[in-house]
Length: 55
Image 1 (tube, rainbow, N blue to C red):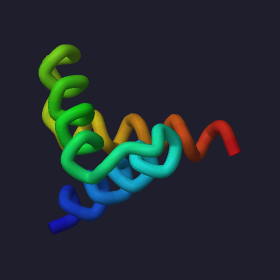
Image 2: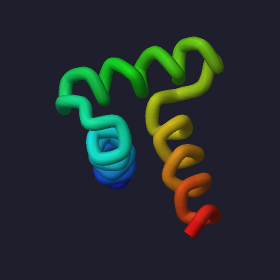
Image 3: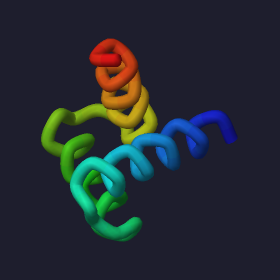
Image 4: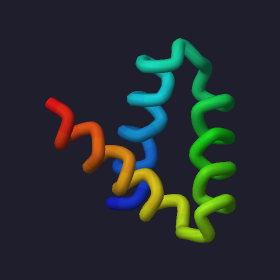
């Protein structure tokens, strides 16, 4: 359940920053996790952590 929240948070951030839909945001996360060979939740967590550091 915790992973789902992180993934949803990352999707929302992508949707807001790129002006894309939910499906496209999810596909972008999946693509990035596969490219980097990391689990989807780990990629989402890294992305959110990176955004938090920029604030």
